Length: 176
Image 1: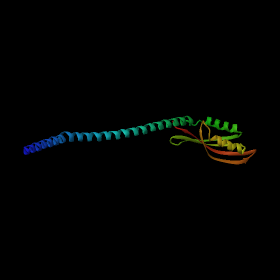
Image 2 (image 1 turned 180 degrees about the vertical axis):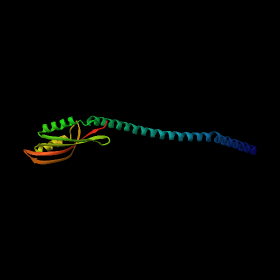
Image 3 (image 1 turned 120 degrees about the horizontal axis):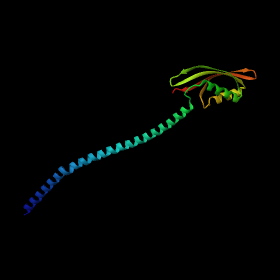
Image 4 (image 1 turned 60 degrees about the vertical axis):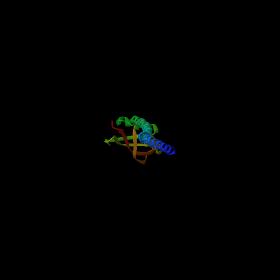
């Protein structure tokens, strides 16, 4: 009976190993492969989601920068004129000179130059007064709100009752 018992145990062990092999081969390993594929797919989707979140942060910062730049453009658009109005420029320069205490003598305009995206116009302004008033005029002149001016050159010479100045000025305007 011992021999028969051993044969039954061996037969049961072979059947158990066969069933275990079939379970592993046909049920466990395919499901394990599917589980690995799905895990890899989830990891890939999480990396993609993280990249999208980073891009969303970048996009929102770019939108903020675009809003800031749009605000700056509108401020510059209001500040810089669209045309060079010679009578208005003359009135601005003469009024400022008179308010400071200078005696304006002459203002000569050069032709308006097309510089691509903007216009420029050179002017020669001649005035007389104290040296301190001329320096004050040049300082305030560069901060005029109505026009964008630059002081190209200045020549100061002694004159009657003070000094006289010959200034080369340039006014700018954007093209529409």
